[in-house]
Image (cartoon, rainbow, N blue to C red; front, top):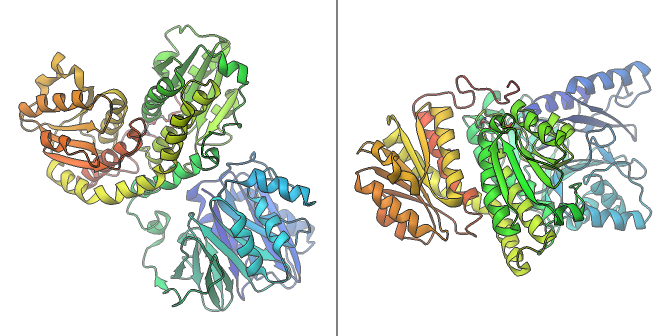
Length: 622
Ligand code: AGP
């Protein structure tokens, strides 16, 4: 999740733009850059690492005083700046934004992913365009160059029409010292209206100190901003009529960093549609195949793979468990699963015919890194599934599958879990395809379902949140929660139980429902809330009879069921429905009410959900 800031107005804007980037640091980044236009000349500085490095690079530009980003005369009053969270292309200065066209007369900054970047790059290179980065984003500068006929808005509109994916971008042209043009498709874009100046940004904190008057840019819109204001058109070039209302933002700066949400955790729960969309978008570009060509695994190794071992900790372990079901179901490869802190000390039998996958959102968890190294020492191929480019896991592994959830500030993992689960689904389908292990028409059907998951996540959160809040209110003083599930629903229970533990400090247990009668059922009485994951699956009947067993002992059953299935409500006190999809994909939806339940119970008990006691976001100690 990159950060975009743009300015056009009467004030020298170099430091304004960098201050705007500082306000977007919470979005996470690994490099940054700035471009300023003055006297018909654009000058850019980019730097890897944090904003201090960019400031230092700008300072260096100052020292050699050759104008531009330094002390141009007159100082630039129009510019673009960017913080990058790498998804396509390594963390390098060349890959940092802004990116230019062949003549460097156009500069762009982009947040998101251009799904059809490979195809467009080939076309543009055939037309003679020269690229200077590995990124998908640079495409946009060259597309604008391709369409440019003295009208920047029209060129941006035409380029916008060529793109596929999930993005928002802003463009500047050396021939237009008073104009910036930006466009939005899925990723957020906001305009800040000042007095004789206008800002563009991916989030309000970037300019909140300067103005509280904002224009929200909707999906599919293109906005042209000047010092006097903004004009919005749609993708066909029609002006917005009536014009969009200007909104007054009342948030303080801290709330703004949380996007208006009271906590980072709730903000990140609501960011899950984006996190999953960005993780799957360009890997599902076709309708019938999964493109994981980024993985450095030879087809022969994949075909002859004997076994997969997944090692991880905490929430990542639960995503791995879902991955096991999906890989065994679709790719028919045996998957061994272990908690990393156990795996590394149990003398595991592992070797060259095995693929060991370490799942770690931070990429820095000591136990997972050690388990990966152990497997590597024993000759296994090691893959890291991580959310952080450049993290230790990416350096230790032979190959890396990135989730693209953006920086997660809340200690309790939410969006990285659903992004990891989506990555496991991609891997399961890709392995199935690479080994002809699952009928193509079924793979195609699941790909279609997977593409629909981001919007189903948004629908689920919207439809259940109020009810979950009410359930949380009636259960906030319970002293124990039991979670029950079977098969692929069990990892969802484990994750729900962990969330409740780590942010509400209420003891919980998650159990395979079939095991209840072998002991744990003794725990139940009228006061025990039992959360049951009972989404559609081949063994739903079994779960329903287990739920009836616990209900018969007076337990208070809260069930998660698939829309359209009314049987579950028969055996539960409260039922929360999630949209229907393929049964193997249901967990990515079923977990959402459980995240929200833990969140609202903790909030109602006045707890700090972003920084729970005794917990760190990244566990780098053994
Ligand atoms: C989850 O909410 C916790 N923050 C914790 O269990 C976490 O999942 C675990 O420490 C693993 O972290 P990783 O994914 O960064 O390796």
